[in-house]
Amino acid sequence: MAKIHKACQEWGFFQLLNHGIPHSLLDRVQELFKENYKNSMDKQFQDSTVVEMLESSLSQGMNFSTTKIDADWETGFFFQPSSLETKRVTQPLPAMPANLKETMEEFAEEVKGLAERVLEIMSENLGLEKGYLKEALAGGNGHGNSPFFGIKMSHYPPCPRPDLVDGLRSHTDAGGLILLLQDDEVDGLQVLKDDSWFDVQPLQHSIVIDIGDQLEVMTNGKYRSMWHRVLAKEDANRMSIAAFYNPSSRAEVYPAPQLLIRSAEENEIVVNAESSYNYPKFVSGDYMKVYAAQKFLPKEPRFEAMIRPGN
Image (cartoon, helix red, strand yellow):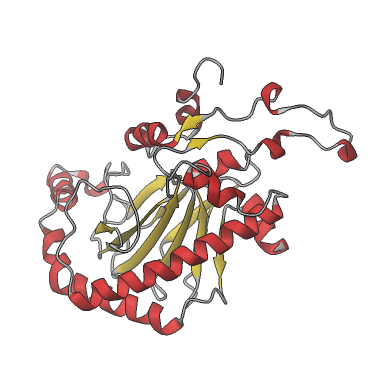
C-alpha cells in the first residue's frame, strides 16, 4: 500500500503484478485481439485518414521536416461490455468474432473488479472512509448512477515515418482510473515526469494503472494525472487495451472535503472546504465536453473552464 501511495503521488502511473486476473485470460485477450487486427483491422487502417495525411505530407516535401502531423497513428474501437451498465456510445461497435467478444466480456468483469480494489486502497491510503472514491465516481449514494466503464482497444501499426507522427499524442486522461493491458513485447508508452519522458517498459501479465484528471480533483491533487504518449514504431505493431473506470456523466466532481482540512500536527492552519481554493466543483459530463475539444492541450484551462459563480 505504501508503494502504491508513493507511485500515485510521484508518478500517477504504476504497474501491478499479483493483481488476481488469470494470466491465461490475459494471454487469450492478446492473442485473439492481435488475430482480429490482422484479419480485419489492418486493411481498414491502410485506408484511414492518418495514412492519407502522412502520404500527403511526404508528397509535399516534408521528408526533412521536424513538424509533427496533428493526428495519431492508431486504429481501434471502443468496447462496452453488454453485462455492465454504461452510457451509450455513438459509434457502432465493429463486428467482433464471438470468441473475442466472449473473452472481452470476461476480461471486463475482471478488470472492473480490480479497479474497485485499487480505488479502495487509494481511499484507505488517503484516509478517506471505506468506499469513498468508488461512490464519488458513481455520483454518490442514493442517486441511482453507476460509474462509466468502457474499454478502448487499440493497435499502433508499423509507421514508415515515426519522426513525423506519434502513435498517440501526449495528453492526460480525462476521467477516474485507467487500467491498461499493454503489449508485453513492444514498448512505446511513455510518461512525462520532471520534464523528461520515461518508458513504461512492457512487463508480462502486468496491468498499468493511470490516474485521470477527475480523480486528481477528487483527491485534491494528492494523486495527479500525468502527461503520457505512445511513440509510433517503424517495424512493430503494438497492441493496447485500456479500461476506463470513470465518473458517471451526472456525478458532481469536487475534492474530498477531508482532504481540504489541513493537519494541526503539521503546524498548518486548519481551514474548511469553503475557504480553501483547490479545484472547482463541476459535473463530470460538462468536463468531458470541454476535454473532447482540448484533449491534447494543458489540463489547467479545462479546470478553469469549469469555474462557476460560487465554486
